Image 1 (cartoon, rainbow, N blue to C red):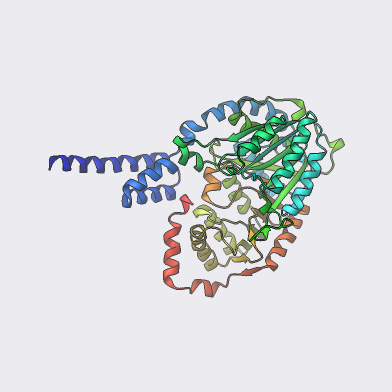
Image 2: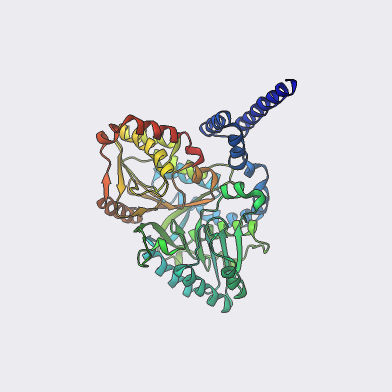
Length: 484
């Protein structure tokens, strides 16, 4: 009996200690409460889940080396890039209402404003890949690629063949891939690239002894930099399913958005790639003029103002999350959002509700076909609240919408890799591009309006009057939002 009492006491003490660890280590009160409830009601499983997925390993040890390694490179590169940031901020090229947004990204995200950019909006893979192939073929100095998903299929091999050819011509070619997202590549594919002279590195290689935690922190970025001048960034991975001009069995129409940058903004993408590369690869990249060619006003192609926001487990603040909050708070007329996974959390919900109640035109495009029932149920609980306050929500019916975009007042376009969910805001390495341009915002608005033509607006009355058990289920799943 004494042993049973001792074991029972030890068991309760263990639960208490784990709960204290959650409270101490988890910044978000919503997430902390979710972990505590899980630990209390499903104790053993809950604790295993927390120590695998929830504990803040990233600030304790995993990315300490990355931060230390990044610092000298950051100072060397950003001191050069920041030279013109103040001039751009005071030039009148961006609306006054966005000054706090740009200054926040600059200070918290170490990302300066850039001008002298040509920006091209790319709709779907069938627009991205021809542009990418043409740019790769013209490369003269180096090619750097970083992808969450890179598949060994028609598209992946088509790009790989060009990279191999360029490497044999003497160009520096580096390929960084997420070890979880690109798990299907296979050793033979990587070996073929290495034998051709391409340097490759998996981002945070998954090993059996740290499987759960390493799966939890993912490099979700999709970046290509060519000769330090041309950059590609957005939501489109390297895979056949991201293009609609390749016939695949049971393939959905894939709606996605990407950007091609030509100009100073590519320098910051280069910096992001170099930091990620130096963390993962045994061969370190150092600052070279060829990686950051001078792009002056005299040889500028266009004068679009661009600022790039990045965040991840190595950043002190959730820069992308905060930048979206600030962008929405600056809206005066309209907010148009496209997101495949819409689990915004309380802060974003509050600011969207304020915008709606203030009379702004708030429209949200979400998938009509979801690839996750749990995520869809959690997202639906947020739709209920937004619809109640007057938001206009549309379900895309043509296929699967994977684009991650936002348009503010027709003068700010945001395109990137970050979904509107907890994972993108807190766990993944992400990159978003802020384009302060009526031209690009208008183009993205046209694309958004075209998407609405093949979407169906959710009827507020029908949605709110669904059976109570459905609403209850969605509210229960919403409690798991921090884990999804």
